[in-house]
Structures are given as C-alpha cells and as structure tokens.
Amino acid sequence: MKTRQTIAATLCAFALAAGAHAQKVDPLAPPRAGFALPQKQTLTYSVDWRVFPAGTAVLHFEAAGDRERITANADTIGAINMLFHVSDRFQSTIDREKGCTYEFDKQTTEGRRQISSTLRIDYAQSKSILDEKNLVTGQTKHVELSVPGCLTDLLSGIYYASSQPMEIGKTFVIPVVDALHTVPVTMKVESREEIKTSLGTFKTLRVQPTADAGVVKNRGNIWIWYTDDDRHLPVQMRARLFWGTITFRLTGNENK
Image (cartoon, rainbow, N blue to C red; front, top):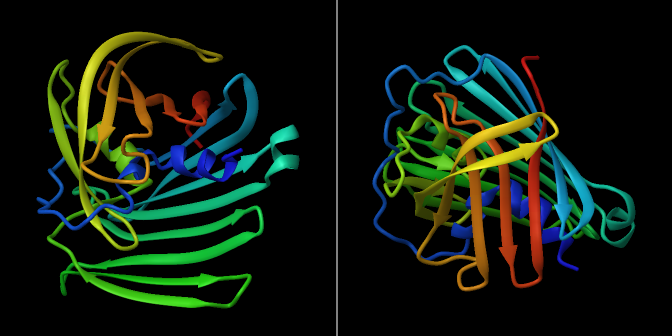
C-alpha cells in the first residue's frame, strides 16, 4: 500500500507539481481586498484511505509579527499504522500581507525513511536554498536555484488559495516552490457542492489543482473543497490515484 504517498502527499496537495521541469512562473498574486490570515487557528482533519481510517492531520496557524507560521502534523493510525508507519512534520513561514514563503521545513518519518529538510527563499538574491539530510544514512544535500519572485510552498499554498477570488468556471494560478523546482499550479473552480462533516454541512466550492507535470500526472486527480463564503476554509481534500482514494475531512476548527 502507498501509505507513504497518501497522508504526506495529500496534505500537501500541491505536491502534484513536484518533479516537474522548469517553467516560466509569474510571482504570487496579492490576496483579495479585506482578506487576512488567522491570528491563531487549529484545524483537525480525519484521513481515510478507501473506506478505512488511515490517520489524522492537525494544522496550526499563528501570527508572529509580520509573518504567519503554519505547522502541520500528519500521522497514521490503527491497522494502517501497523502496515506502514508515517509521522510527518511540516512548518511554513510566510509574509502575512503578501503570502510569500520565507522558509519551509519538513521532518518525515515514513517507514524506514527519515528525512529532515529546510527550504529557504532569499528574495534579495532571488534564489531558493535547500538543505536536506537523510537521518538514516547521514547523506546530505545542498541545492541553490534561482526564483522569479514571491512564491508559496506545498503546505501554505493550499491555504493561501483561500485569499484569491473564486468564481465557478474561472481559474487562477499559484507559483509553488519545492525542493528542486518552481511550478505554476492552476486552480480551477469547478462547481458548488454541499459537504457533510462531523462539524455540520457546508456549502462549498470544489477546486481542482493541476500542473503540466508531476508525480501524479496521468495517475489521478486532486480536489479541494473550500467554503463558499469569505473564509474559503478548506473542509475537504481528496486524492483519487491509481492505487485508491484518500480523503481528508475537517473534524475540528478552534481559534487557539
């Protein structure tokens, strides 16, 4: 089973852009007028693989001066955890007004694989700097690449999309930076749907992120359901891939 590729990859829905070739990328668009990232908020998601409970994901937002810190923990549970243990930690630091990513940290434990990485964006020098270490083998990697301007990352991009206007049939593009690439991810607003969760029924906008290349190109689809209001809160995320469907559903929303 591809558990390693479920919780981590779907939590970072923009991971479909990973592995793509270099493309022309425009800088991140500014947020819509009146939009503000939360001063403090915790979102909890249940994670199901097909019909089985697979894990949990907890995301926390906290303002720190002119920056926003987003942390995410993703862990397998139950029988899935016995088959393939996953415990991933992500942290993204972004500009509160513009959304530009300054740093994206990952600590991943996926089966026997343990990786720690830090991706920093130096806008003054127009470059990204990756430092990565394999905690099992001790192997390290240092990569520096040029970047075109203000960018988002795999984690914060899901939530920065909330700052953009959403209209049925319209698209907008978010430039996503990963370890080795910067790729434009197109967000298509497909339809309105009602989504039922343990927190209640939400009127939502279904959005599909796509890229010209990536690890899930021609293998499946990813969708994110945002509330059809000023918040554009992501209440559900789903990846339908060739080995099955993984779904994140919002189960907790606390201002703490």
